[in-house]
Image (cartoon, rainbow, N blue to C red; front, side, top):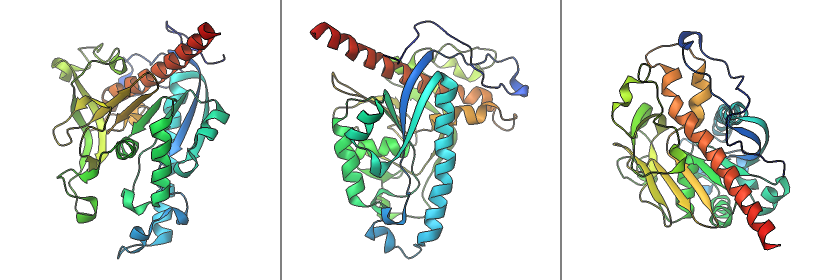
Length: 311
């Protein structure tokens, strides 16, 4: 098997360090080879829009499509940048939400799947697309990480509903929504391997971390899941949005979801210091992303060992 997880640190990362944060340690790569499918959850083609979307008074097919494609470029670049900064020899395949099937994942021999965020309300998507994804994610054995809109899509698949932060149906408040934005604190409420090393902070640079179990992560959303989905456990909670991080861990599945944007970590890594010290603030998201990839490879290697023992 070409997929490898290194128990000890391997080659140091080539990721640049901001000149304003030169005293910070460079991230070290714990992951060797990994095959990751990145799922683009934004609208990709005009045919992706539902009849509900087309009935909206402000619906503009070309303008909306152009905006989604622009955001897609930013979101997928951030996710891929994280994977390439965290693994020595990653292989990445991008699929659209409409293309996610067991056959596509098997053909790539994926070790992990990362779901991007979204821009539109989910009733603006063709229902068949959401239903197809839901069927896949309920049955996949490939470890999954859902980010923001991806977190919400997983919630839908397992019985949750998506509401505004003030608990209105999305269709009730399309405009002027309350948004959770910028770096925010969230509280870890359950121990899990995804938080490995999260408390190993330099007190001189991370003075805000005095309360154990507190993370700072980037938020940008106006919708949220209304309940903990069936079969999931709550891992982290917030003030505006109570359900910030979930896990489904069974013998057959490993699914993590985060309401916040952990893919921002390397985007902010090299920015100059402004109101926020981005180099510091992005650290927790980077570690969570890295730990997911590590856990995914452990799951893959464990499955391989079980197969050998059964032969």
